[in-house]
Image 1 (cartoon, helix red, strand yellow):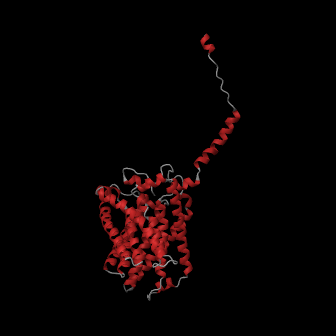
Image 2 (image 1 turned 120 degrees about the vertical axis):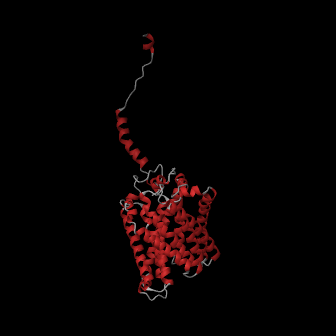
Length: 390
């Protein structure tokens, strides 16, 4: 008893005012920690958002192609040539502003969220969209109303935009070549064709600057890997590792690759030859094959997502290829087809612009993407890993 009484007594003083002050300020502190607009946007903004700039830049190139004066007696081309230059300038400026904004955001993401960029680099879907900004810049450069294709500035910028595409080619294609076909079989998905499109756009840009050898080099690099990808995807699309429902719009990338190949080879050869026609007919067949299966895209259209922009770019490239085809052949069928595809492309792009503007709060909602995990997580299966990148 004596020992127990000799132990010092500890008295705990509780200040009620401090507790009330802490309880009232703690939610505000938590809110300030959770709500960090710059870091939140950088965490949620991934390369998949370059679908928007890709579509707008291709639209700018299509409008410039249709607006160029040509010896075409059909009234449809005459109407486009009569459009005021201000309309095209506004579209080109919108594409430039969108691409600049997204490029700046992604540069900041590389500086402050490098771990997320690294995960995206090794992601089977995310790595393909790293080609998208360079493709967009090349398309915007070719559609520029201010820079001539023969100018030194245009040639310098073209080289600057093509080099990252080649660097990504070495990483992606070299990985497929050295690690065996099992890696391609595991990672291949419809978005893998964006890497092929990057080479074909580079070939088209080089051909328009009269760099024939460079254009043939880029074209051969893209078309060979397109054949490998097409066969691989054709064999595994019905398997168990198919894309999740929200990414089914990316199936339209099957249209973009042969359409861009037709445009690139037409620029290299200088005319619409048999090879260009064959590639255009292939893209046209794939387009009708997808359009005749609306049930494939039914579930992905229930809720808006950035993956919807995967419809616009392939349709625009197909319309561009139909323009070259209508210019190279005679007959009303080709021009009617060009009219229909161009109208569909413009309507789809305009509708996506309106829907995106109305749903801008949904795109960066915290419920869609976990800012801690980021948009690109590497998992063992393609289905679970690709769902987070959309």
